[in-house]
Length: 421
Image (cartoon, rainbow, N blue to C red):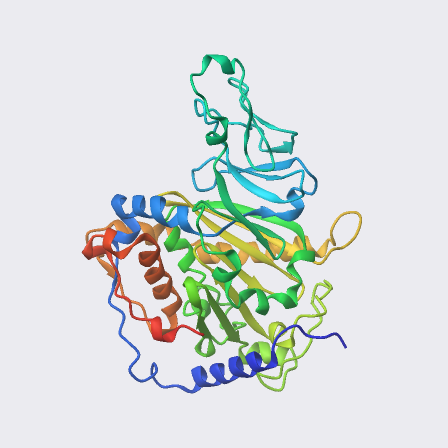
């Protein structure tokens, strides 16, 4: 039997948490009542600009995968947050991120979305930069610049690191280390061997709502038995969902299976965790713990990364603002390496099935945004089951700086004592 790469003490605690959730008659004693989330946080231009300036410029974001730049000189552009950036593997084999803006007159140093280069060279006046450290190597007619100091004119380097096979960037050059930010998530996700997975398909779409409206749809299961009803049949028991609030706005959600699903999987009870053969015949990742086979297990990595995990592979969902009332949802599906040739045909069906679930999740989002903009709607009351949403809103304020936000748009900081150590 393969070694399951998940701490059994954590599994036992998650089971105890789900038992508690199923049995409770009310929220925990002394749990705070959430004040309404001001609707202006989803509709106000000033708040949106604060996010653009302080949140997205100070957060770790997935820009791509390590295999996107396999060799020295390979690069791709990243422009999802409105800042022109280039990710490139240097001659020293290290992956870095630079501003894709020439220090002379601001033209791009690279125009194609991806490719292979020896140097970063502006096509306007051919100022040339190195791919290892962004240093300014050459300036045509340098004699005509008075006291030009090339050492001071290199491309700004963006914080860049890797984990799980993903390339992460942070526009803040003094950002805290990626691994410190991720906390316990890499250890808990070790069982998926993420660095060895391959992209098997994508599903990119745009929805007409604020990015927070979109991502919040995937941070709770309070909606599950209504939006995802299958004629009175549902695969999850949302009453038992345990929401782990982690440091830095990250979180975990584990939800037990419904009675109908327990019977279908021939489990003795919802906590009779076992290895389940995939109904489409897809190969399981051998190191994934049985709890993943028999629950819905997912992580949110602040601010915009959500992954509903599964034993055969999983999608990663990235949410980027395309405007105050528009969101780009980028969905990437990852699977075990299948070797040469095309991926297993069953993955096409699995991706289509997930797309159907996403269709149900985003069905209401346009209308919800319009409601947020209505004078008859001034705030959102959240319940205990929706505490991951409130925690994310708290952290948004802290990253922006509470003192920068108008008082009528802030949220009270209430959940610090509930963060897992």
